[in-house]
Image 1 (cartoon, rainbow, N blue to C red):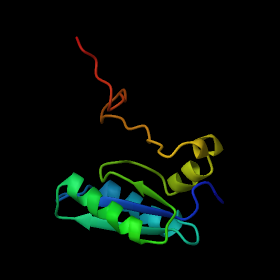
Image 2: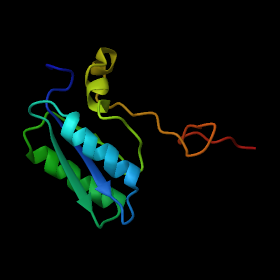
Image 3: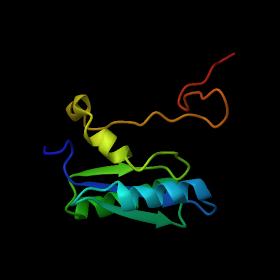
Length: 116
């Protein structure tokens, strides 16, 4: 695929109380971080899994080659799509997961918990 995953559609679900930091980062992403042919879409006012199902259905009807869902409490820079798209070792995979951490210090992986 040219440019990693080709034309990327990035989507997110807006929660009832989306944090200002996410709004600023999302705005920078869609104004500075998309390449020609890329697109974006949002869903709101529904539970996360319903919103994601709706976003995926919209993606499947679009002309985009790849879909990237960004959770509305994530923190990222405007170049995140380019970083993922240009990471050639990732081209061998159908799905990449961005490393998510819990809030607080030191950051801990969200998917792993210590069982004490």
